[in-house]
Length: 268
Image 1 (cartoon, rainbow, N blue to C red):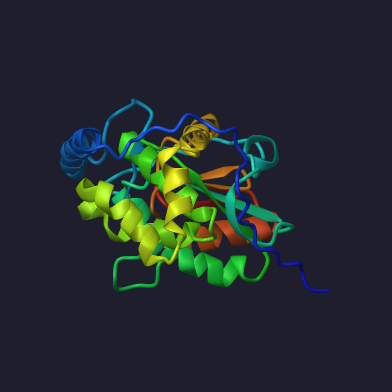
Image 2 (cartoon, one colour):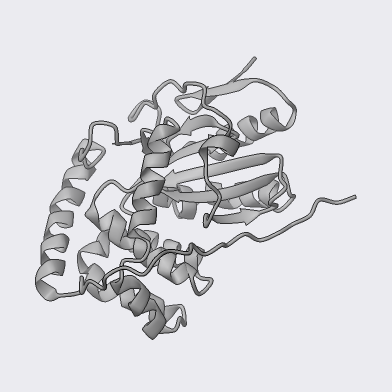
């Protein structure tokens, strides 16, 4: 008997919050200016350095080493799926959680690829998610104020079934985030969303708290940088190549003990 396949794109229920007009020119100019400085700095330092625990990890183990993973509890007790953006079989034996930042170039590479090879996320979907072996969950790992703004926007798009499409638009326009005030509503329009509903959701900051809750959850589960992943509670740090995820998932499917250091899989 084949496995059940269910698409999970649950919307978060939250209490109404005071509407904030965050689209005022002065506020946006300040946010855009701060982000521009931080983004340039990140290109030279490998991260925004806003907190000691948040480190951006690249796919090149030599250029940006990943920390040695430590055992983590099962996601069943540590990762909340309530309102989570997820794709795949809800009854899959493997839950894979991606913790990512919308201002992280390595996170964009994981989702969109390098323009030459097939994106790692697409290969994971094709070979494991679509076959019912993996439930793929996306969580926010916000590193700065702009991350919170963009996470809120993507979640508002998700209310109209366009979370993943809106996420990709953000990643495709990383170099233009200084113009986020204009781009955020423009992207909603490009996707054919009801802009009135989107703007109401966005201006209320309905999902800002969810974004920060995801961050705390990731930190509690041992995630220290972006992108960071949990596969049934075990950590993979950085935008590793597809082969890393393939080996880890196959090992998990076969009941083998495994760990990953610097994108290298060790099976015991």
